Image (tube, rainbow, N blue to C red):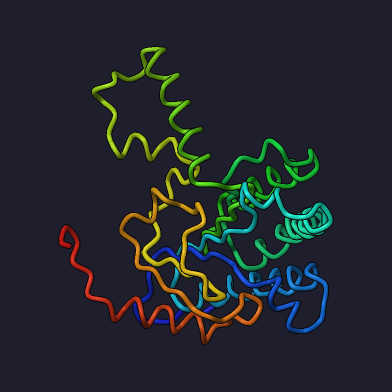
Length: 237
């Protein structure tokens, strides 16, 4: 599997937006848009690796998504359940290392078992590092991290004065994963929607009107070109 020699960001994070609007434009049910979006995720994983990206994180299901209509939530859970099962085969074929970030405790037991199997089966793969944000919310992630850190401080593992950014980062779901260099959001929306608020502090943002199911390698390259054209002055304003 040959990779591009052109400069690419090490870590790209994507907010997958526009599945419902894609389906509505085609007079299809919303679940058809989510299914099309899942197929796009599969292809973009291959495209990202070929373009030289080492880490890819996608926002698959947020903590706020539970508020959607129950039939849509059920359809999303069914799709995610099948995706997790299929991902082991695809990850083995493509040498992907897959990790799920977010609070998986509310998920059905079979989904949690699929996540454990997927992460264990792919942990030693050396290709694309693929993170799926599932029942993820950045505020929830930070609160969970703070609570765990407070317990360790109370038990004497650390002193309060020893808490640093690096230490706090080690209590987040993304422990061991470099912060994103580039964040992409599709469908024209220009907000973070509670996604990786800590990790995106110094990332470049790229917003596109393209709906997620229509996002392809060409569009990903546009985002990379935008990233490379930016004049990044670390420590500046």
